[in-house]
Amino acid sequence: MTERAATGARPYRGKDIDQRRAERRARLLDAALELFTSTGYQHAGIARICTLAGVSTRNFYEEFSGKEAVLCELHERINAVAMERVTAVLDEARELEPAGRIRILLDAFLSGITADPRVPRLAYVEAVGVSPALERQHRRWVEQWASYIASEAERVAAYGQAPSRDYRLTALGLVGAITELLRAWQAGSSSCSVSEIAEEIRELMLDAIIRRPAQ
Amino acid sequence: MTERAATGARPYRGKDIDQRRAERRARLLDAALELFTSTGYQHAGIARICTLAGVSTRNFYEEFSGKEAVLCELHERINAVAMERVTAVLDEARELEPAGRIRILLDAFLSGITADPRVPRLAYVEAVGVSPALERQHRRWVEQWASYIASEAERVAAYGQAPSRDYRLTALGLVGAITELLRAWQAGSSSCSVSEIAEEIRELMLDAIIRRPAQ
DNA sequence: CATATCTGGCAATAGCCATTACCAAACGCT
DNA sequence: AGCGTTTGGTAATGGCTATTGCCAGATATG
Image (cartoon, rainbow over all chains, first blue to last red; front, top):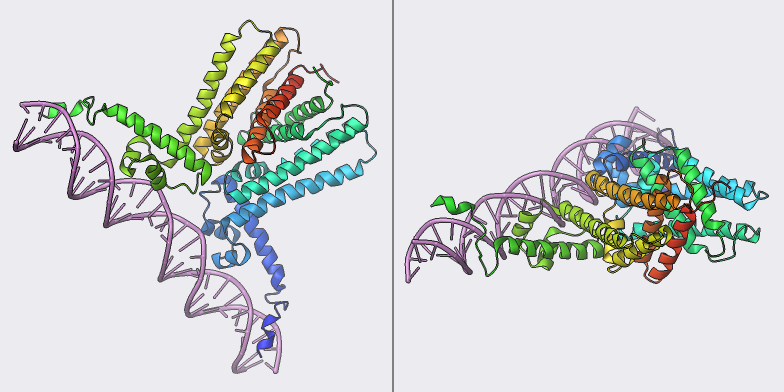
């Protein structure tokens, strides 16, 4: 009688139960991305997100603990997807010379992140200064990107094209440079093109890594 | 009889009327800076700001139109003060060689902005993604700082130590690098010292400006 | 075909907080 | 010293929105 209560894997409305949950989740994330980047995170109401997603508020709370949880997941996904893409591309180019790897890394990252202008907007504007938790998450990713860049720099150094030194701060600065250029790009789409940004960052990065020992 | 209503410059409680207003304003700004950077802008209530400032909510609305106006003014002041300081220092060093000017510029900016950790926190974390108006204000200042750096770079170029080219994007990236390093510094005070940041940015900047024509 | 069970939408609730009306007290002028 | 005016604190109000309880409809199974 009551022992069937724990089933839950039975198809219901043509689809599996957690399949529908997943679809709702995806629609909610899409709608949230849209609203967070148009009306802004603060002024985006849960009701509106649900309406846009075609999901009731009841179901919203079945998936997320609140608005901030949605923002967290979006932020996490954006970074994870970008990181995965970059890692995959760099794994392909294992035999390439270090400087070429950096070019590849940047192209992969930038083409991915600028495919949808809402993505950099969410990651670099809307998700800033929201809560201590999100701030920690953001710092974690920044550190991760920085150490990724630093390890590539060390590879260049091992190749003999750059001095052997601690690249942590340099990498952190480069992450900031990329972030700011993307933020500017996203704010006014007329000010500069993606290829210009890519070119600029590439030069900035190579100059910072292949640095003359001292001045 | 009623014509005296427009006076308002008569001393009231020992002090002039607009003098007291100015003092209240200052106290409110101080209290807001403190709360915005501790509990965060969003979760900082107007009542708390007033309590901390020793000012009633009534007087708050006499000075500011709302919480966001306070944040705007803080953001504006921080940038204006920093810009003034940098301009003053550079005016002194009019005869210095261009590369030395850049060193001076950075030292002045960094020593000023890091004197109070709350300042970079407010400018680079709390004031981000709050409203379209604040975002515009932020962009205005970023552009201003970037063009300032760009003009210094052109000075280096004119001196013959750097190629003559468009430095706008480079400067924008450098602003981002500075911002990110300060954001990291402010987040965890143990990760890096101000002097390390200063050193790093100096190198980053000089390398980016005194760039080999092409590679 | 009927019933027990699950699902999801609607609307009520409840808490929070900005904003302002009002009143009491302080102050300067005559 | 008294009065009219200005000041400032307090407390009420009003609106907004996140959150959840409840019910009607849908669904699979016996």
